[in-house]
Image (cartoon, rainbow, N blue to C red; front, side):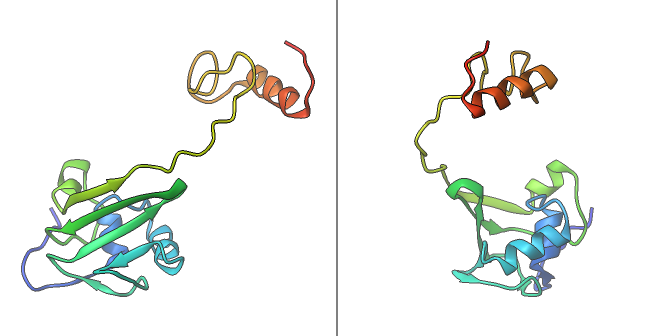
Length: 136
């Protein structure tokens, strides 16, 4: 396991990948550059160093925020169990409730009658619904 303890420090973009909070370093860097990552209350660039005990606030899509405390350091992407050991979540703000827009007829929240991504037939129905055609 690549986790380290003590006074050492790791770049925040590397730590986000190790903790599985970002899929790649480039996505972690984009999040930092976009002001979506705050370290101890300040927006930080990707090269900022993170240490044990630091507080990180991540702004995720649709108004969701995740606040956590760094418990350990890691530089490489870890397995899910080891990654969760790197931090402790303090608070997760739920997504702001946007006005509900009804979907096309016959579509469930899973993306289609069978769940998951919509198939070809489902996509065609969605396209017809968006154009305002009333075919079933």
